[in-house]
Image 1 (spheres, rainbow, N blue to C red):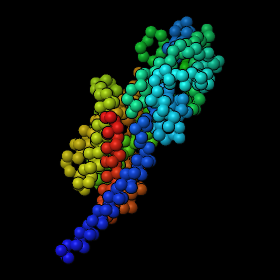
Image 2 (cartoon, helix red, strand yellow; image 1 turned 90 degrees about the horizontal axis):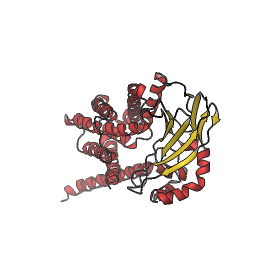
Image 3 (spheres, helix red, strand yellow; image 1 turned 90 degrees about the vertical axis):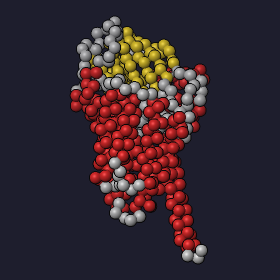
Image 4 (cartoon, helix red, strand yellow; image 1 turned 135 degrees about the horizontal axis):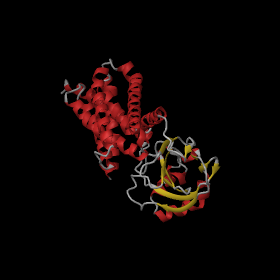
Length: 391
């Protein structure tokens, strides 16, 4: 008994310290991510303009109305990042009528921040309807639609869309009455105006300008908005910070999400977000938990990562479908978005390597003091997300 007691005491003390460190890191990540059940990722508003030959137009604005009322811009990645999150959460629990009662008194100032100008002259917008889905699953943001009408002056040559910076990021699509596809589409940052849109002929965005726009969209979907994708990549890094082992995993993940992203955008595969999002959280749990039981890259790991990459690609496809791709430059936009995602992932890996791997990867205590506690923390956060997404 005397021989075993010191060993048991040391083991127990190490286990206690390791569990405390894991819990602390987990709590820090949860606090950093701000993951209350009612938090939601903010997506760009979708602006659709349909113009008739007579000059009459219909403007449809699809957006997160609760975030607009609360004053939370889509330039933030999640509503929980704002100090106005409690107000947003209350609005999310309201009925459509209750939400409209709060919005209608401020609608004039809201409309004043929107600009649809023809040859430099701002058009008058008349609100025809305001539609909000019934209160449903509060873990998913609902989209309200405002429909405005107006008439462009005769003989105008161009149209420009803009919105105040507080409106946040948005996507503008312009369609001629009777057409099913927009002849102009663009992603705009908050406060950014569209280029002059010709109403005399179909205007196509330059291929390089369109490519650059979607590279930016893809990058921002990882950094800073893709917190679940970031944790997945960090989980891959933690198994082994050696570039050779990491390259096998990242290559498999890249190939997989590229395939499923393309299939999802082309409509070949269509899986509801209610299924994809919990599975993405489950993939993070798997990677993090496996890190606790092995420090080697076994043969099944790249295969599992490839399968999980397919899931993440479907998640990317859901986002890109909402934003839309111009028909005439569909492939260019798709490639640009995918490259942006890759740049985002490489940025995460570089940050991990420079922050941890470069300094500590050869230390004998790297796995015990860094890899395992961080993996536990990631698993705890992903478990929270999984429960939240299936609730």
